[in-house]
Image 1 (cartoon, rainbow, N blue to C red):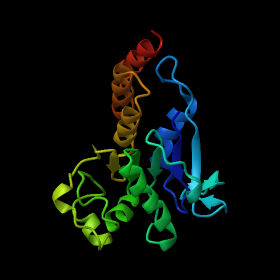
Image 2 (cartoon, rainbow, N blue to C red):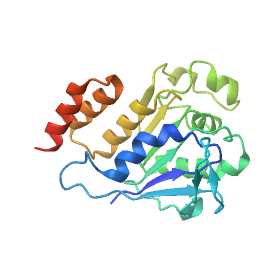
Image 3 (cartoon, rainbow, N blue to C red):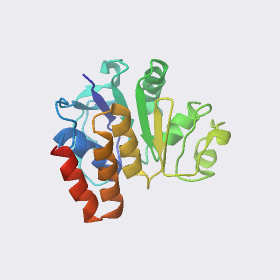
Image 4 (cartoon, rainbow, N blue to C red):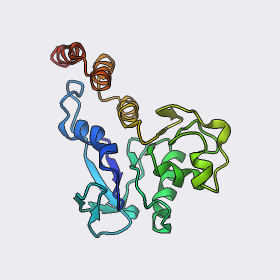
Length: 208
């Protein structure tokens, strides 16, 4: 069974992980028979983390306690504190995840840390707009692989800019294969447009 590790970092952008945490925790639109997926908040410290929205997160485990398994998923949320060297161990862990074919998901500021570590130099990716990574990640050399869009999935790495959380979540769910394809499309269409017809489509699909 998969475990989803979410990196708890001070100033974590709460809204960027809201879609994925709510769907994983509730399991409300999972495929029939799909088991609950554990979520563990991981950190470089065992001290409480304060998010950008003022919420307190108590880490479940430390970076060195992460279990390397190709079925596990590592989520790196955006934050204003990614330039702190204390986060280097989680970036090294991200490299190990990708090496074994496990999924790594980074959004907003987290992409700068991956860029500095060279992880984006040979994979299609995105971030907060053209020129953002060049400005904030001096170690970045992946410009030719940059795509100016909300979210990109390539070779087990899923990246997004700060406004791409919904599509990023869709791509994470697709990678985990926990929704039926039609249900995932209706879920995304509903939350991206607000049109009620997609909500009723979703209800029909999950209640088959």
